[in-house]
Length: 492
Ligand code: AHR
Image (cartoon, rainbow, N blue to C red):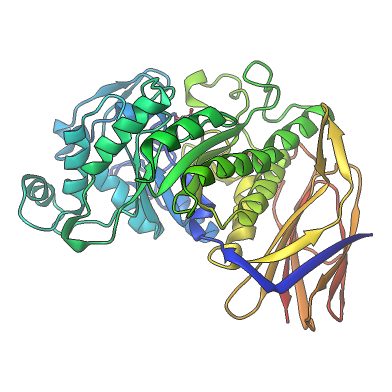
C-alpha cells in the first residue's frame, strides 16, 4: 500500500488557470476546418466558428488560446488578415504543407473565437520576418482607443472598441524557425521590439513573453537571460514528447509496451527540465519576477497514413491521456513559477483535444483529462506527497504514481492521481492532515494503452465514475487501476 499525504495547511501557490491553456496555429486543419469554417459553411457555425467544437471546448474549460503560431507567427503579416475578405492577400504557408493561406481567419476572427470561447488572448508577434513598426502597429490596432491611424483602421473594419490583449509573444523559436538567431542577438532584438509594444491608455499591462529555450537547451536560457536582463514577464519553453527522437517516434496508435514506457518517461523528463531552467533564471532574476511559460508541449508522433506530412495530424490514445495527466500534475507542482502552458495543438494537430472529419467531431482521451482537471484552475496548490515504486526503462527511472492536489476557496480538495504502470493496480492510502473528511467522489479514465476514439466509435475511451475506494475518517483508501488517471474530490 502506498502512502499519500495531503496537507491543507501547506498552501504553496495559486494554480493559474492558464496552465490549462491551448495553442492554435495556421497549420494543417487546426484553424481552417477545425475551428473556423466560414459563415457560408453548411457546418453549423456562429460567425464562421464551428458550434460543435466551440461548445465542447467551453465545456472542457479553455482559459487561454495562443495564436497564430508557432513557426507561422514569424511569417505572418497581420495586415494581410484584416478588412474585406475579397481584398485579403493570399500567401504560401511555407512551414506547413506549402498550402495557400487565404487569410480569411485574421485578427477580428481570432477575437471573435476567443469571445465565443470566453477565453483570454495570447497573440504571438513576428520578429523573424517582420519589423518593429509592424508589431507596434498591430498592438496599436488591437488596443488603442484614441485617435490614431491604426485605431481608425480598426473602426473602419467594424470594431469600434479596442480589445484587451492579455499576453503577447515577441517572436517564436527564434533559435530556429523564427530566424536562426543566437541568444545574444535575439536578446537585443527582444528588447528593441518589446520597447514598442505599448500599454495604451493606462490599460491593463500587456504581459510580454520572450522566446526561451527548446527542451534541454540550458545554454540559451543562460545567455539570453544574461543579455536581456528582466524586461520580459515570461520566458517560453518548448518541450515535445518525442520518443526515440525525430527518427524513431513511431505511430500514434501502433506501439508496444517498451515504446509506451519510453513515451511516458520522455514526458516525465519535463520535471527535471523545468527545474534546471528555473535554476538558471534565478541566477539572473533572483526576485523571481520572470515566469516560465511552457507555450508548446505534448506528444509528437508520425502523421496518420495518407495525410499531408506538413499537417501533423495524429490520433490520440490512452498513452496521450497518461502524458497529459502526468504533465499537468507536474505543472501544478511548479505553479509558483509556471504561469501558463499551452498544449500543442487544439484541434487536428499533434496532441489535439478534438479531431474533426467534415462535419463530424470526436473528443480525444486528452480532452477528457483536461476536462477532469479543470477544477484545478485557479485553485491553491497544496503540499502533497505520494510514496511510489519506480519504473525503469532505457536507463531512466520514474515513479509509477504521479499526483497533485489543490484546494478551492470553499476548502474542497481536488486530487488527480496518474498510475503509469501497465500491469499493476496500485493501492493507496490517502490522509488529509488535520482534517475530518466528510465525503469523497471520484472519476476515472482508463483503458488499454492504445485505446482511442474513432469516428466509428467515439466513446471507446471516456470518463466514468470511480467507485473502487473507501472513505476513512481522514481520507480514503483506493485501488488505482493500471494505465489510468483518477480524480478524487474530497470534502472536509
Ligand atoms: O507545433 C508545431 C511547431 O512546433 C510550431 O510551429 C513550432 O513552434 C514548433 O517547432
